[in-house]
Length: 133
Image (cartoon, rainbow, N blue to C red):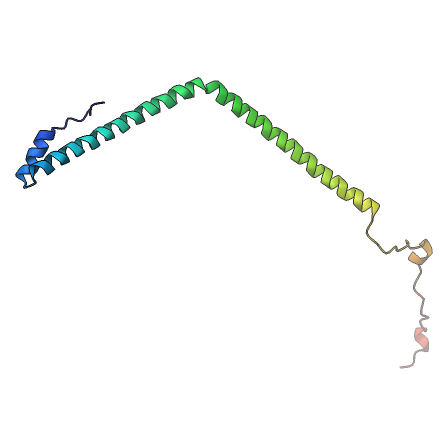
């Protein structure tokens, strides 16, 4: 694949030689830079091709993606139902154990009707005329 960016290796080598770089070294640097630019362009074209491939594959797998989303929603609903059943089962087990082994409570019998309404003892009040000032 040729580089899409125009790069004149001879002009680059001459520029380096005029700056004082030896001829052999200037040609080697020009060749190396040309290779680097070519690799960069190839990777950029590969990225563009990859994005196109992804879009094409996304269109091809659209049905599979929708099916997976639907299956995930169904799985979520089944998990919610199972979790609710476990919570209700745990509460039922707790109440069953409490019924089988009740907590010890002191029994206090209810008050008898007579005990409820016992009138207070009456205190005799002396007559007013018997009190001496």
